[in-house]
Image 1 (cartoon, one colour):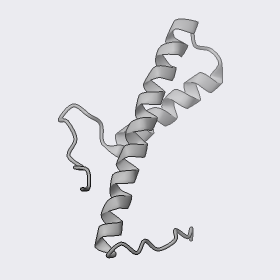
Image 2 (image 1 turned 90 degrees about the vertical axis):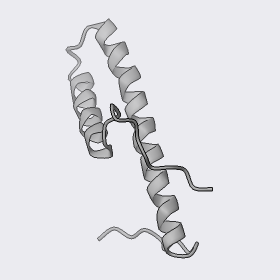
Image 3 (image 1 turned 180 degrees about the vertical axis):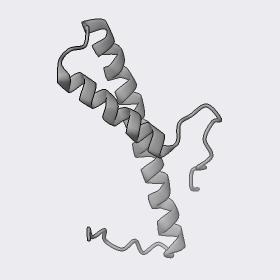
Image 4 (image 1 turned 60 degrees about the horizontal axis):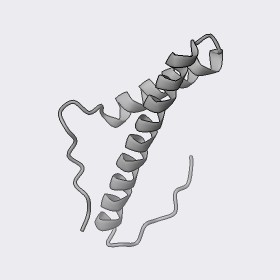
Length: 77
C-alpha cells in the first residue's frame, strides 16, 4: 500500500527542506560555526535529508503506479 504524501502542517515542503539543507551545508563548510551549533546543524541536516529522501521515494512510488508498475529509467537531459 503506498504511503500517504500528506505532511504535517508544520513540516517544510521538499523545496523548503532542500533549501534549508543547502544553507546548513554551506554554513558548516565555512568552518566558522561553534561546536554546539555545528552539532545541532548536523542533526537538523540529517532530519532534512531523511525528509527529502522520504518525499522522493513517495513520488517515485506514485510514478510507478501511474506507469502501471513499469518505471522508466531516469535519464538526465
